[in-house]
Length: 463
Image (tube, rainbow, N blue to C red; front, side, top):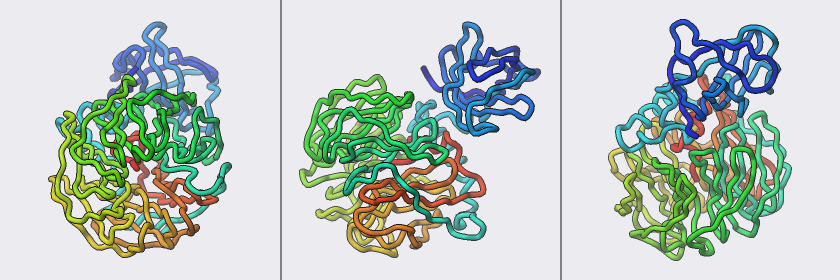
């Protein structure tokens, strides 16, 4: 099954109820759903009178049907029980704005002809608003907290992943249960197959919709499929403190980022686990988190490493010089900015560091530089990069799309609070609980929020 979008697909249907739709003929000037391909998924919109529903469905050529797999939005907020009458059924977003920008779409253009990043930039710049502060009734973002279901102590979760249905899954570090927040803000827990102290750190959304947790101390992989089924799988290489964070490659491989591991490890799109040689390793913790660059390279974020390390789209591993390094831990997590720069997120470093789209490494001044204060970062719809407050940070810190660094007040501070963050289509940035007893988010309310396809991009939501 692939995820496919096509331009100018629109048909009629007289189906009623909450189930699968039988599709009729193409509307005048449009094509039918055969362009999606038998057995493939796509976005759909169904409109009948005042009733409407937007979601992800699977097209089946036999019977000419479209299943309603995941409802993303509707006129009632839930699955629609369509009444009698003729409805329009169509693919709602232009293919040029979605292909190559989401893990559930076609990533083949990443690192080859630049189409994927070009389209990603288009979606970003629709919301940047010339780099001004967020649009929220004249206020620079509203910071708030919310209740969690599971609030055990330090290090319960490490990073989060946005699922295709809009849920945010917390990655279980030492938690005994999984925890997620639905697109409508409902917090719930679910059972895990494998738990232990420091089991996983960071997660990756695979091309098939599975969410993989990255093994830190865990001796097996663990994933959640699009239907919510949790399962484990064998790894080739395990090590205490082996990996921290991961990245989805253009070919669908998931790369675990080596922390103390002496080799790389990846899971292919077909589920095959394998290892590969690295150029640089450090038993003290070389890298924490990674970022997919516009050309398809995966950059590991330097923690104690004395040099940068990357893997090309063709699988070639190489290193490069950094401007600032720290053997005690410099950066943790990274973010790709709208202009193609990769920013490493400061943990202990007194300066910011970035790699331009042309490969130039440079540093810049920060406003707030207390030690071990941030872990991971998130790109906001207006182009700001927010550092996630980790260990006692008393203020938030961000970098605007114009390069201006500033701080802002948080609603909750203290202790080892959050680790990693997730951007949702509403424009909210969720910081993922580490030891904090409450969730915390920043509601950016941009003039034009990101679409779900952009939020699911392999360029976004990294740790």
